[in-house]
Image 1 (cartoon, each protein chain N blue to C red):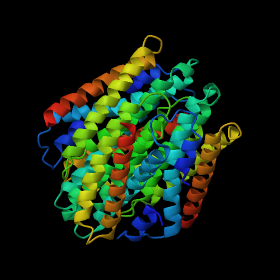
Image 2 (cartoon, chains in turn cyan, blue, yellow, orange):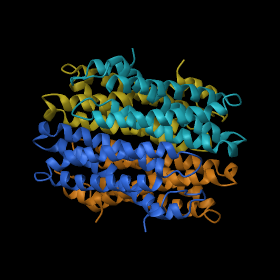
Image 3 (cartoon, rainbow over the protein chains, first blue to last red):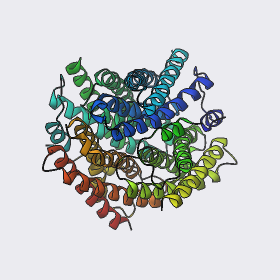
Length: 135
Length: 135
Length: 135
Length: 135
């Protein structure tokens, strides 16, 4: 069990249409993605070929920021917020797919890009699964 | 002139379709909104009537998070990122409009809600204006 | 293995004095704490006794923000940054201890405060352990 | 008047020892620094000499993250939080001074580094001034 699933079980607010497991998974995948994308942008910066990794670094930094906001917004269940959550989830899925695409190009050369691409793909899938549950 | 407009003038990357003034205004309105929403959530929490302000606090916290991510993502001009920026901008506009609506209900009683509602409205407008420029 | 430890293994930069396991643990505990504190502030807000939980909510929101910054800063290993990391780690430990103290007061009544207090304690310990490694 | 000073005037919580003007100035300088540092990291990444700007990019990214957390934490006045605020302010001042130092090295070549160095210096000064007020 993760801290996230423990917190969701302890939440006094009605979780509404959200499937608890899909919600916990999406939050955890977003937090993994914040870490992977922040670390991958930094690792790309340390490479000799940094000049060829600009688009990858940009995608990672953007993805970290939207995943961070998504994890926080999904962690709140009190009051309204459903419409905002749907739009943020959709934007997060797009950012994760874009970053997975950039990192996949360099996954053969750089292990950090391979790990990050996989973290982004899993996060995008978790966002799409949760979007279906909530819609 | 703001720090943001100075930074945009100094940016070596092609700013592309983005109108420089619309971009600077949107970034600055997002940062204003991070502050207003964070402070308004906190001020609502200090009110005797906090029990009636739950939806407003929730909307403020969500709005601060998405405005924060939007300001950061819009501040990056290098590499790709256009599609992600469009989706984030759209989600940000929705969050600002939702928060402006919540705060407007309490603007007569609480000056902090009045100031925050206005900051959210201005940010939503700046997002919509920039979306038209970029689309 | 977590995404964080996979990313650290793939990092091209010299990890310097930082023990890899202590570093991965600290980053992961910070991200857990971002989630637990964000969710606990929200769960407190949903309680009937929200008026008595103001200091707890405040501590949670502050703790989430500093843990978020700490996780990001620790995830970067390229270039300098050691002094900044030490000061941020120390501030993060203080915020986690303060939040653990607030949540512990309500842990008997609210399961979310019990889970959050434990997440904060583990994060504070991980910060203190890493500080010793890095100093 | 800025949104921040309007929000501080509307705040129902006791602002305590904090001088209102010093507090508003520090929050606004932190938010300026989030923008300048995010944009400067991105602009450095677009330069042909990106390989020589690694330490500068790292310092900018760290500085943006700690300034972001500091602006949010200082915007909250409800409940306790004084000790945490002091430690975060001190860490923020150190990060701003480190980033100002890195950017100053490249200020002659890159206008974005000159603007960012100045934003960092002003933020560090505002943090030091507020620390004296609060101590």
